[in-house]
Length: 295
Ligand code: SAM
Image (cartoon, rainbow, N blue to C red):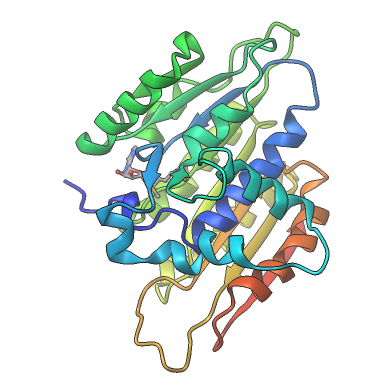
């Protein structure tokens, strides 16, 4: 079974980029009335303790959410503020003990009147158990479902999404594997290809690590290659926090988000946020960001 546990990484710089992008995307999607089906193919445990053993051992949030929280920006940047407010809303005033994972962030933004739905896939037995327990506390009934299934496979049965109360089909999918297995990179592209065939107008968000590995390097290129022939718009953002010259830390320092059918508002928001994220989280050697779009 897998050894990856997101509790070691919760609130790190990769979560900052991923969750900020997720919130900015969802906020736009929620402007239209009809209900949406959200799918989180790799959900994790849902909630994490920043003062617990896992997070304290890795200390990754210190270079991510906790650092951003203490950063004094000269001018307010809306997507960063929205992200910080979202995380703060899970904590008592002034404290930072809890970090919400993607299922709880999405749930917080769901509209009950529009009958939005959230489907969560998690394979790891321990994280599935934690997620189930955490979601039970929400008393969300049929609005949120937790499935212990392979998220890549499970997604197939959910696309196209059902017709909403407003008469249209809408879906937004977050694909956030741990990439423990090299095959995950290929499964992501296969999954996107299949999903676009099933439901071409969905919004798809893919997170990936930027590491010296051919499959990781090739992933955004392969995703662009899937969008080009069917003229699907895409947006690609990366954030690299670099390495301190004195640091012997060999952990992840960069990651990317690739969004297919992004809301038109997302690019300007990321354009505003990325330089500030670099300023706030940058550690030195190699730090930077990129933002490109196409389709
Ligand atoms: N999306 C979460 C968030 O942002 O809070 C973090 C998810 S973590 C990066 C990836 C999760 O996927 C892990 O909890 C892992 O156990 C789970 N996982 C790995 N392979 C899977 C698969 N094929 N289907 C569903 N879950 C899987």
